[in-house]
Every structure is written in structure tokens, then in C-alpha cells.
Length: 296
Image (cartoon, rainbow, N blue to C red; front, side, top):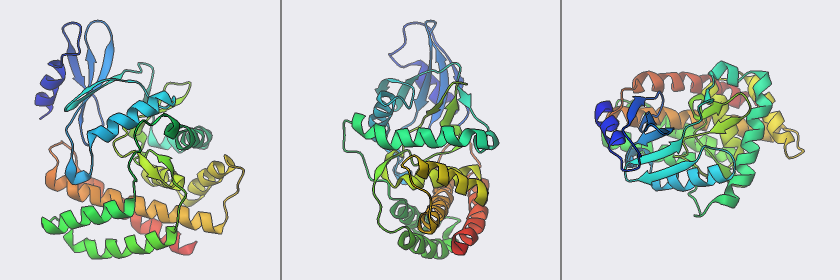
């Protein structure tokens, strides 16, 4: 599949000369390549819609364009069915998860998220979808049950937790979120941070971005609470018991979603990725995070 995707990248009509295409790491719903056409370099994402994961490229296109206009992301230079071509940030690289979670980077991260939540909507040319993780988790659960997926025995427990966490979150004030914040979706060029891969971008509670990042970085309770404190200070607020409980509920919800994402992926995806190991890692983190939530 990688070679087929590489050929597709090379054969796009966008190029000005003979091209080379080297696979890039990451991209769990697409194949990514660094392409050189003799004039400059580009990042190319090859991938169609993935309805099983609720990934639709038209949304990624619209949000990627808005994110660039808001100064958050590299430019989307061209798109056509099955392919997106982005500007290549030669000096930028994915940060190590441990480094991202270090105290020195917390202010950079929370400032970037504040910019995303407040500035991106003003550049969005479409209404944009609502990303409600509880509904998406229910959808994944139905798919797993309908197709007899390996995770079927865990679904009742996870859906009971899903309902409990949704009640704990309660009403929200939506802002525009990335919704898939992991280390591989954050670039550092030694001057600033960039956000990439907007396939799940949509309206949500700003705390979800923060909590899913804490979950994906596997931050401990103290580091996660410090991230929450600094984010709340962007709006001159201090975290209270209620916001801390909602934050921890979101963190658990993010781990349920990513666990089920892995369960769906192992049934349908055609990428070389350890979905089973990924799912188990998320379930282990969920067990720890549920204890933190119920102690709040």
C-alpha cells in the first residue's frame, strides 16, 4: 500500500519537474511523503475518506486552510481527490512527547491552543462540524459490535463510562478545536510551534483539546493540572474544583475514544500500525485516569 500511495503522489499533476518521494513517519489515516520536484519540497498526504473513523477530507481541507490563515499551520497549496499538498517546513520537526510535556513548553502549548480556539473561527469559510467525542465513541462502539470486533467484550463497560463522563462534562461553550492533539501533530521550528493534521477539527469545549493532549502525552495529575491552570489564566481565571473535574472527565473521554479508534482501525485500516498495542496502551491509561477523575 505504501508503494501504491507513493506512485500516486509522484503522478500528481501539480509538479513542475521530475519528483522524488520519501515516506514520512506518522499519518494514521493517510500515507505521508516528503516530495521534491527540483524546485522545492512539499509534504503530500495520500488518503481518501475513512467513513469508519468519521474522517472526511473536505473537512480537513477547509479547516487546514483556516488554520493557515490563522497562523497556526503550514499552507495547503493544492488538493484533489485522495491527495493534499502542504508547504514543507524544513526547520520544523515533531517534538518528543516527554519534551512537549516539560514545564518549559507548557506555556507555548497553552498559548498555541488559546490562539487556535479564539482565532481560527474567524478564518473558517464553512460552518465546520461539531466534534462530540461521546457520540463518536458510541458510533465506533456500534461498528465494533456490528462487525464482531475484538473489543466487543469491553463495549458495555466503556459505554457506561462514556455516559457517566458525558454527564460530568455537562453544558459547554464551544470554541474551535483541533481534537486530535498528540505529539506527532505538533511541530517545533525552534522559534514557535505549529499544528498539523486537522482531519478531526471542529467545534468543542476548549478543555477537550487540553485534556486529550494531557492524555496522549501521558502527563501525571500534577503536570496536567498545571497545564489546566495556565490555560485558564489565558482568560484570567483560576481552575476550581468543577473545572478540574470536567478536565479529568474529558481526559477519560479522550482515552475511550482513542481506544475505540484503535479497535475500529484493526478491523478496517490498511496501514502498517500496531492497532492492538495502541488500544491496550490507551485502556491502561484510562484505568489510571478514571481513578483520578473519581477522586476529584
